[in-house]
Amino acid sequence: MAFRGIIRSTTVSTDLTTGTMNTAINHFEIETALQRAGSSWSASQAHGLLCSRLAVMGAEGAADWLTLVLEGADPANEAHQEGAEMLDTLSARTYRQLSERQSEFEPLLPDESEPVPHIAAAMAEWCEGFLHGLVSNVKDDDLKQKLADEPVSDIIRDMLEMTRVAVEDDDPDENEEALTELIEYLRVAGQLVYEVLSEFRHPLALPASSNQNSDDLYTPASKTPNL
Image (tube, rainbow, N blue to C red; front, side, top):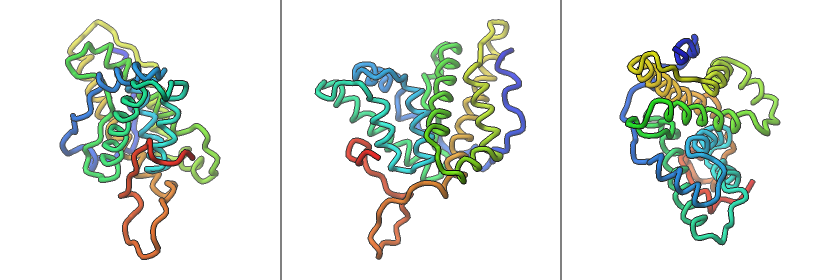
């Protein structure tokens, strides 16, 4: 079975494996919005990119993400604006899921009622997006070293394998069970990477008298200045 054996001994903390799942974000709606806006990104791929951008840059990463995901789309198109608003909602909810550290984060994938091959393909796209956002344009030597160290290096290797995952038809029940395990792994791994990279996120400008942590702030992506 092609799913088995992907996850080795990556040190993902079990602290993050409990809690309620937020199902308010609909994969189909985001996929449709991206297509109507003229984006070349799939919903899962775009969400994976968002998660790693937020991990590396914090809330400021949302503007960079939105620009990339909607690159080439006509801003005068009404569907573009509708898509941007929906993506703003997605980025805000994802940011809160990660920053509030209450284990509500989950990768944006098709509903579990969809065929396993369809979900597996979206899972691979999520990993592609996450890895692209994590390793592209990394210029800070300390950040490069952090990505090369455990546990992030193990997670990167696992996700690379997941981008090449294939579904065999020999045992549907085993396929579903293995896919569930991999999705849970991504949920925990995404949260862990966000935690591990906290020291590298750019702080937002705060008044000198403010005691508010910059990680608790969020500006909609469409209103944040481009980096």
